[in-house]
Image 1 (cartoon, helix red, strand yellow):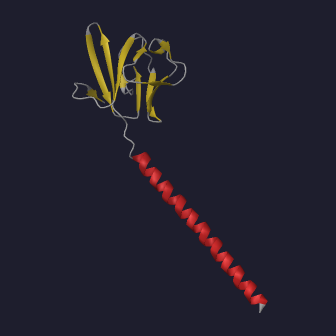
Image 2: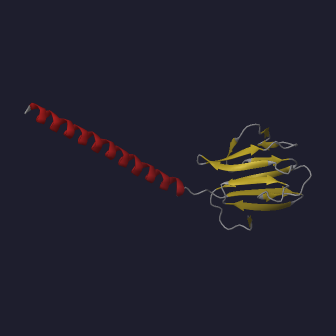
Image 3: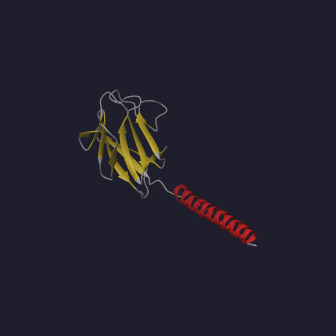
Length: 150
């Protein structure tokens, strides 16, 4: 009789253990699914880059999470200036912030007159200089605007 009770206890313990593991996996799966929905719904704030040269200004607005600046035709912000490298700088939206990174350019990238040697956070109102061209940065919803959306 004690052998049958011991067998029943072992079976009950095994069922309880499997139920615990399955419920833990279901909880983890639901949590990952909920977090992935939050990541997918993250909206990249608009970034507006305005150049001012010789009394004229030109603006570019982007809603992409990565914007490349350079002379290369494949760059998002293509500029025909000899002081700009083909792949000069990259703006990326990560960790709810915009970052600027120099891509090994010849004439350097400067954020508020400081050289960019490692990726740095940029904010609205910052000045970014690539070669000889200076950009004014605006981040967020920009009302109206006559900018090129690339």
